[in-house]
Image 1 (cartoon, rainbow, N blue to C red):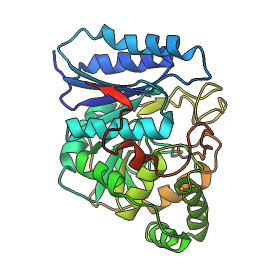
Image 2: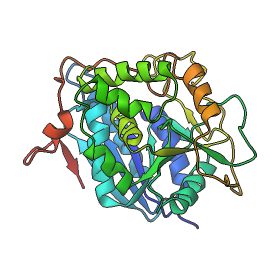
Image 3: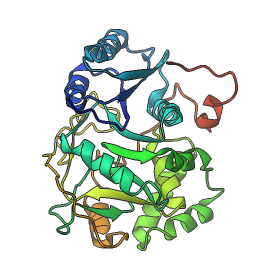
Image 4: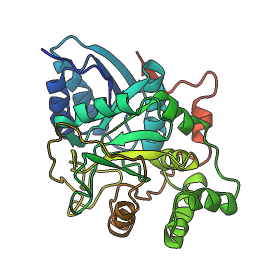
Length: 320
């Protein structure tokens, strides 16, 4: 049987039910390489150890030839730290990755979509990631995908050299520098003002996430994201148990997924400004949007946690 050659990084925590659903879709692809990244139990949640053990046991169901590698946190690191350090570990193993979180259910064609476009744009530094997400009301063209400034991360893929930009990114010294970066990507004042406020809070340590740093790294490079013209990934994680996506009635919850075959490529590599503006006006304003501000946990101090975690001698995970 055919095996997916592109390595998959699968990021999990304590939700065995949704994790198993996503794992079943991964298993259909029989990936040659599977890297599993997991956070550890929270000290004030006594049910975490049991749920985490059940979640991690799911990968024992692998029944195909597979190079399995794991990076399991011994203690809880939080969303921002765990994802950033886990993906950095994964990109140290491989040049290219398809990345799925435990609640992001892909259509089977998502994997081929990512694999083909990883190869197509491998040597183009302007394209920094490929996403399986589409929130538009209708396809924007007859092509299979378009280019965007919005790096949606509910099922995505990228390259080691692009992720290096995440590691190299330094916080802006002030709002003037931040606004300068944003003005090269966003033409509208309301977008610049909104993201100046959000990213300022993030770099001041008030928001516990990792994707804002990734977003800022891409915007610093004026990088592009490939977005499909039909949605390929459904987020199953909306509800009270979620970290960010808590509104189970959100129109983004469990969206329909579609098949993409015989890719039709755009003639030009340029942002679809109309689609991106629609995303800002209709998606970025939603509670539980792909980029929601979430306060940092008081148990994890603000500051440059990425620097702290990668200092010599630090031990946060058991990675094999």
